[in-house]
Length: 241
Length: 158
Image (cartoon, rainbow over all chains, first blue to last red; front, side, top):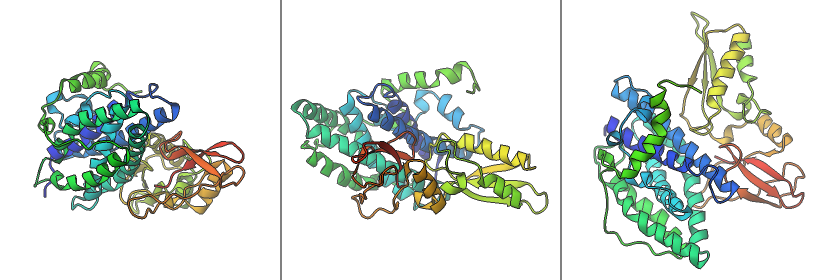
């Protein structure tokens, strides 16, 4: 078991890109409470991302801090899974993405909290409690929409069908990692499948499995996201509020 | 040393200004270097993305500077992870006094979270409902009392 810079960037970039996407809902969510909820979840993800990026920068030893890693890498240098960079779509798509992401992050952070790398274990123990809230929140919405009106059911099923293929990448085997993602899929399924059942949704069949995010191959959506996220820092290096 | 610790312990939380960082269990320790007398303060965040941490660090340094320790260091640690169980009895009383329901026990049993009733901090009724799991800050949820009809914040168990 070795903690590598690449592994840390995978975890960090998942959280960072998810935070940026969720932040797009600020002042645009369907109701005030949801606006606050998504901003809070984005903040949790950003907090985890900062801890992981700082650790990655120190481990790399090239003098890059969290800001340099977040704002001065190009899209091919990002290691996030493609799931988090996909556009928010309608509210059902956002909830499907959050359900799948948190059902992956919760067992991941839980496993990390017991790993031999003390610093990574501390980050996992901290983030795991927050992931539990994210999972509950997205599960409640998935049930509310799936088991709601004919229209909300249709949209939620469409969202689950569209996002499901992107979940496979999360569990690509990496036996040398502090926690092998391949071992997390059983926990993911046992969290997600009962929610889909309660939501009267069909669990999509496993098939097409896009991947490449962990090695820097992304959809075009990431480039636009990074352009917006990085523009201020690149135009005004070292700018502070 | 006594005064340095007292100065740090009196720093109030910038988002919930009725409680101190000691009440909240954010303050982990205050130590003086035996040789130089330099103060090191150790704190831990409530939530990993808590935006108040920078202000808390600045407030600690300002409080120590005023107490005669201008070159203090503030360190942030993450393990063991903060839990609402660390909020002191005095802190809980101050929260309730300010109309913020203190958290119940953070320990969860099994995969289904145990839902405990939350008492309205204004009228004391337990006939309350959760409006949103996420409230005005990362650490709070929004509730409403069905008896007195007032909305109120709750520090959510974590």
